[in-house]
Image 1 (tube, one colour):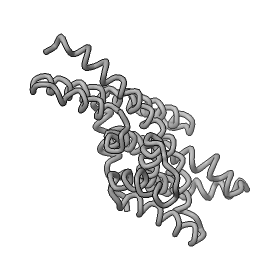
Image 2 (image 1 turned 120 degrees about the horizontal axis):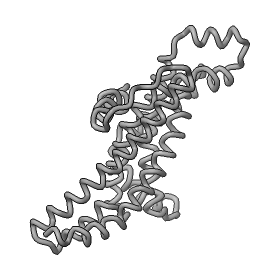
Image 3 (image 1 turned 180 degrees about the vertical axis):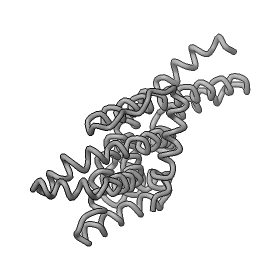
Image 4 (image 1 turned 45 degrees about the vertical axis):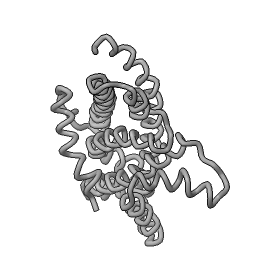
Length: 247
């Protein structure tokens, strides 16, 4: 059984490249949408807040599977344009998790002490300057832990792309499993599990570095270095409620 591990791993690694592509694309899009709509939720204009709220509730309130199927198969019928499956996956991952991220951004900005806002006003900074130079740098420190959890959820959500034909890790593993016996299937799915864990570790390490950097930039004491699993559990505890439970 173990002698076939390199063979199985090499096939699944082909799908891992697409998993990484979908994850990075989804993270980039989710981050941009989270910042835009998170700030829009705080706008003094009711229409802007309403548009942002509609976006958040639609993407949070519907199934990712249905979103994938609708954009992949229904939207082309309505528009006449066929969308590449990977593009569909990145769009759904980014828009879906961007909706959760918008609430993280909103909460982080609101957590900045009122005195900081007042001090920026006293310095005669414009609203844009106050947000860019004073509020967002401090809010970023609060955003990083829940965003870490959100990005790991996005990574795991990339497995859903198999239903629209993207040959990512899960689809590759399923293709290899079909003609195999039970012991070989167990080996294959264990390899997939380990690969997802490795990617999650890399995301957490990157976000921990970003958290320390963001804290240092605003004059805060960077969080202590710690082992991966304690860091992962901390981010999970901080981020689960923020990313999936904030209303």
